[in-house]
Image 1 (tube, rainbow, N blue to C red):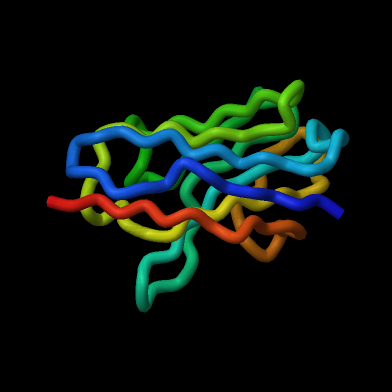
Image 2 (cartoon, rainbow, N blue to C red):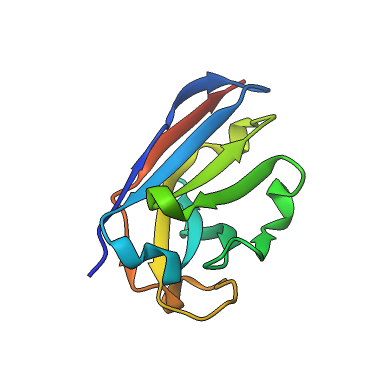
Amino acid sequence: QVQLVESGGGLVQAGASLRLSCAASRRTFSSYAVGWFRQAPGKEREFVAAISWSGGMTYYFDSVKGRFTISRDNAKNAVYLQMNSLKPEDTAVYYCAAAPKGPTVVLTREEYDYWGQGTQVTVSS
């Protein structure tokens, strides 16, 4: 069982930056692939970014490439999402998720076993 807690969301203006954190409860978190998803009101939860267990592989949704960076610190059982040049369309609840997969990125939400409670990101124009 892995418990995930997101933090770092908030209300910012367009063009600003935020850094989301995902803290995990389990010491073996380093063996989990992790992803960030987001869900805007009235929309389905969508993939944002993913990182492999070592951090050696990353993958991004097209709309966030070049603006968002996913990283992890396994010594701290944490994964981060640095979000730069934020746009109003980035407004959503952001969730981190973990999957006990091998050295690969996991792209679909169905493959993730554990989810956090989410953190709200609101970008005003």
